[in-house]
Structure formats: C-alpha cells, structure tokens
Length: 229
Length: 229
DNA sequence: TAGATTGTTAATCGATTAACAATC
DNA sequence: TAGATTGTTAATCGATTAACAATC
Image (cartoon, rainbow over all chains, first blue to last red; front, side):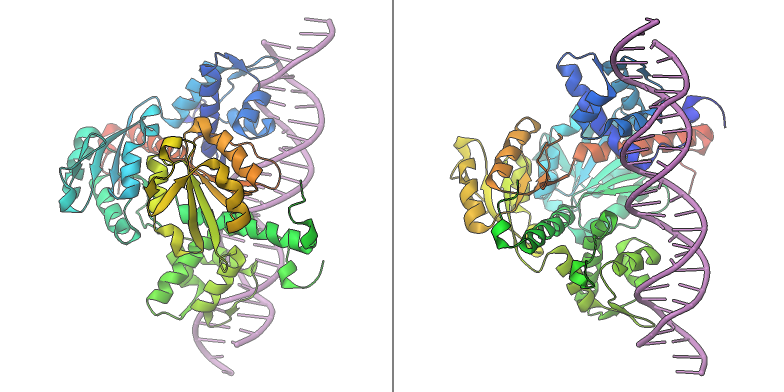
C-alpha cells in the first residue's frame, strides 16, 4: 500500500517464531552489560547461523550498522515492538489440574508482556479457591473479562475431552488467540489463532530419532555401541 | 543402498512431526469402533488436508487400498512402529519445581510408549521425597539409570540458570534425547537431539498475530471493531 | 464394469544458505 | 583509508498443493 514501514508486508512465520529467542539472547547480553553485538555473536547465543539471523532481522527493518553491529537495547526494543510486547497482554488460564496449577504459578509469564488476570475451571467445586493468589472463577465470567480486562489470549490446560467445549466458550466470549496444552485438535473459526504445546508429540518425535540412532549403531555392529564420540 | 524398505531414506522432518497427530486420530477412530478410514476423514480429524496426509503416509510405505482407504489398526501399528513406539521408552524428569511436579503427575506420559522411571533434582533437600509415587533422586544416580534401565530420554524442567549444567550431566551419562522446558538454548554435542517447549515463546508468537489483528481492525476504522464475522 | 480413493507427479511456494556488494 | 560487518542477492533446498493416473 504505502512506503510506511509499519504497513510492511507480512514477516515470514519461520522468522516470527525465532524472534522471541533473539529477544531472550539480547536480554542476556543487556544483563551482562554488553551494549553492542555482531550478528555472529547474537546468532551463536540464539543457536542459529548468522546469515539466517541477518535475513530474519532484515524483515523488521535496518537496525544494524555496517562494520559495527547492533545496539543491544535498540534491537531488543524493535523486536519487542514487532512482537507486540510493548503493551501488556492479559491472559486467562482455563483448567486448574496439575498443569494449570503449575502454569498459574509459573513466574515466566509476567516477565515479558503477559499478565495472568484470571484462572477458570468448569468444576464448581474449585470456584473461589485461591491458586497463586488468584481465585478460580466460573466460565460464565469470560464475557466480563473480555469486556473489562481486554482479555484476548486464553490458555487451555484441561483434559482433551473438554478442550473443544472450553475453546468454544473462549471464542464465543471474544478471545481470539489460544494456547492449547490439551492433546487434541481444536476447531476454530477464521480469525482465531491456535498454537499447540504437546508433551506427548515432542516425546514421540524424540523417540523416532532415538530409534534411528539405535538402528544406525546396530548396523555398524554391536561392538560400535557406546564407542561413537 | 538396498530396496529393503527398512533401509528407506529419511522421512522428512515435517512429516515426522505430524505422525503423532495421525496416530492420535487413528486411536480415536479405533475407540469409536471404526475400522476403516479414507485419507479425507483421517485428514479432517488431524487438522490437515488430505493431499498432505497421503504424501506423508507415502513416505512410510503403501498401507492404503485404492478405492477403499486405510485399515485403522494396521495404519496405527505402522505409524507406531515408524515412531519407535512398539518399544517402551524410559524417561527421567530433572527439576522438581512446579512444572516438574506437574509433569511427574501427568498421566499422558504412560499412555503411549513412555514410562517415567526416575525423578531427579540437584537440591539435596528434596532427595527421598515421594512425588507421584516415585522418590526424588540425586543427579549422580544417572549413570546407573542409563546402565540398568536403558534411560535414553531426559526431560529438563529446571530454571534456565541450571539447565545447561543439568543437560551436560545427562549427556555425560549417555542420554541422547532431551526435551527442554527451560527457557534457554542448550549446547549439546553431535548425536544428541534437543527439542524445546517454551511457553513464553508460544505466547509471544500469539501476541504478534493478535497485534496484527488489532492493527488490521483499527485500519478499517474503530467502528469495524467487533463487527467482523 | 463403474465408482471410489490411493499414491505419485509436477508445479508452486516458502525457507535456508553462502557469497558479496554496500557502507559504516 | 583499511578493516569489519551489515543487508541483499541468487542459488539451493525442502515442503505444500492440486491434479490425475493407477488400481482396488
């Protein structure tokens, strides 16, 4: 549309997914009093190669200085702004089982732009109980949370069986971003984003590679086992 | 090398990452007594399109019947075998904070091929304490776990500050697959696989898209807010 | 055989990488 | 200016998609 950088075309998904790691690495440099980094240094701290880092950052704009590098604070600010972290995001956690409990107590939430404003559960027996300083609320308070707190992000930590039901209620109330810890596929209307975190899936992917390693060393002969590296 | 299907070249990473979801969907069909599915049905249940599903399955072999579909049990078995889930994988969880606690109590582990055989922590004060029926053990028992239990997969649920140290100890003991919940990059030697689950990263990615939606509706004029869909 | 659905092909799309011109 | 490092280019690689021939 225009040359305005804020009207820039979309940043690739793969790049967006790496920006949080760059931001974390920059925060680490800042804490150690380092004010300037090269793409080589920042890439090493982020676990990627420098060419990829520079390519990623080029989608945000031109925030480095040739022959010098990047100013840590400035780049961190630009990435934060791009990710939408210069504002505070209210978050609600639904499902107060073991995992919901752990998430409610997790301090990492608050550190960067997110604030747990409500804990909810469908089980009436839990309502009013205090967890990590917040009362557990019934699902019918969702509308008020969206209207009064500007709630836009919901975390589902229920069993798989109730996840779609809870998801529907979140969406009906106006929540349009959902982080799903339940091991199931959620169906949502256009305009709603779902990201999934699945312990079991991650372990299965590891098992696949672990099995490959076992087969590979078996092919070399049993003697080779435990010798490599 | 040979025409032996077990010597097949690598399955694409993107495909491997989706196999667990297909397996879950197949388990769901089996539980409902459905014995045969088409690629269209299985794809819908897995949240992908049928062309992608068929392409993915084609990397495993030819387990469908043209004009008919896939036999649920047989395909589930083939995927399980490919993922290495026909054997049992012993898992150790390190770090017994809120998250480690929740993971130890998580029943989803056992359901498919994984068995939590040990809980560990660097804090001596926790040693011997029972969590979810298992005692918390010191880190120096890792060697024995690898030798006696065949431990190959470790889950790191410590704070970021001790994750690399714990990781080094796991690797030194012979663990070659690691699932990392700590918000930091782990450095490991070749031959060790690390997968990372990061709550904060997921939320930041959601925030990015949420911000985009807010900007898009603002561009349409404030009146349009809440009207779309 | 006729109808249905797989497995594969080929085109497209997006991501990665190395190299280097631009430039501080 | 000389040295260093960015931002961009172009080539490569891998993933996705639609279409359809193969075949049950």
